[in-house]
Length: 308
Image (tube, rainbow, N blue to C red):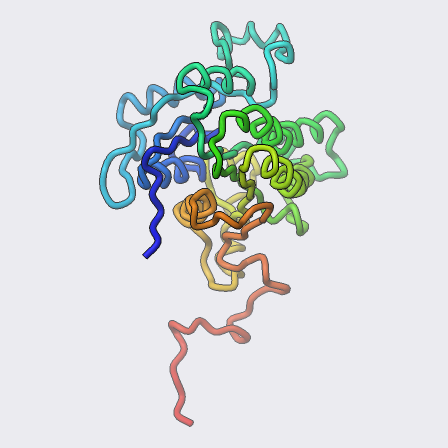
């Protein structure tokens, strides 16, 4: 029977700062399959994340058995491609002061120095930020809109652009999208729906370009909402999760592990012919065309069979 074995492979997961989000679940899934995993952490969270790891405050248990060991943590602010893009005033911020190499190119250079030119097999993009996410699109400023697209969509282009040359043939990249790319999700504002739509469009183009240039596959996962620490910025995340639970095709909402397992599959040889795809992992919520009603779709677990 085919199995997923990442022994001898290395993954870089961008956007990990705690143990409550999809990124962390994907880190654990990859490590559980045998991969060596490096992560990129936003500088303002870097010290807290490192201390939490050192003090054993994070969930380090791997699926099945074993304890997670992160190969290396790189500071990463994916809004900046090269050092020349970093504003001088940012370097005076106490959270950035003294840090070097936190741009996308800086991380690519560090990985090359640390592990060699052909050292990556997997890239995971778990990055999203919209400074005006709680505003409707009609209220969103140009700056807020462009910031959302820069941090949440172009960052994927930049990662593939700069880490692609480090990828071994057969490598794969995967990002995390959301249904707001395709449907109206009230409350998910600030240009974030546009950013996710751009991310999914870019996935298709990158699949062609990176596929032909480096033999790398590129896919994205449209996951259901998760009440992670980062998602709290939306302001309505708990209501969104509840709505999914009540109206998904299967009932309930996907878990972080569900999304991590899908990412593991997409990055594995079992998905060798899959690229440019948006895979929905949301308990079938995306197929629904109206609010689920128990009288129309009774829960099979509570339905009493009738004799006919």
